[in-house]
Image (tube, rainbow, N blue to C red; front, side):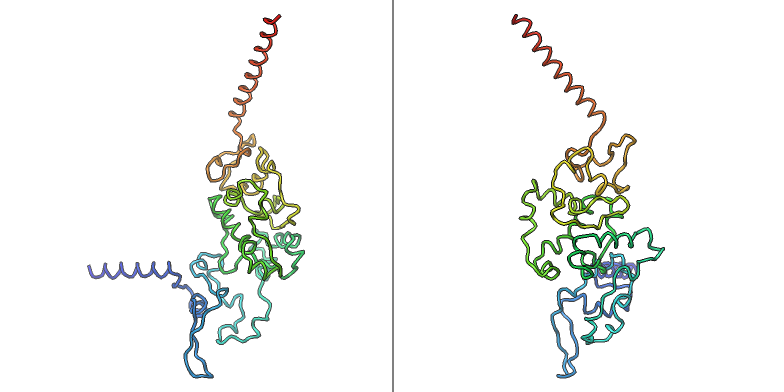
Length: 311
């Protein structure tokens, strides 16, 4: 009994540590996260010969729970950051060193070919972000190397994909501080910019920003060529029609959509991802046409008899 109690206690403590983000697989990362996962950090002030505690810069605090679920969770911090960061206090000139980019590891590597990093890089260089900010606008401006997950490839929920994707856009476009840090200018709010859009809240919840702000790219999972705002989609019929562009973008994931031989969409008629006007079931379409023509025939016959009887 005592053994079972001890075992249960160990399991509960283990789960608790994992949930709180205090459980780390790699001791090399543990040294960095002892400070970078906390609101405060402590160090020995050699000049004053005493222990001191300071507030951690909020931009340098790592969400360890998100880190554990990210694609790079097995990496050491020094795989991307200079090994000199293992000593503290960190040397000031380390902040001036150029950061590692995604292509430093993923570019030209056949083992990552299925993710099309090189083609994505080509698309990014066509985007308005790159044209305005150049090499300063790196992958990490949207995709955090610490917490990024392949939600679009792995999730079976349209809502989850939309929420995750839009959060990346809104992390700058709905955050004055971050937007100003990148652009050097202020901006109106996202709500004001999209005041022309009917049912704005519903669109933000169920459609990704990139649906309207990127061209459809069949060869990529997600289009990365962000268009200038003047070229954004504004015609409702682009999505709300039987030939909805969402079929070639948001709904193109094979794990979310099955296409019938006649081009209709099966399996997407749910509250989660239904788009008015974009889903048509052939039999219902046939029935509606029969009803329409029957009504027209009835009206024609009725008018004909009225004309005859009036004479």
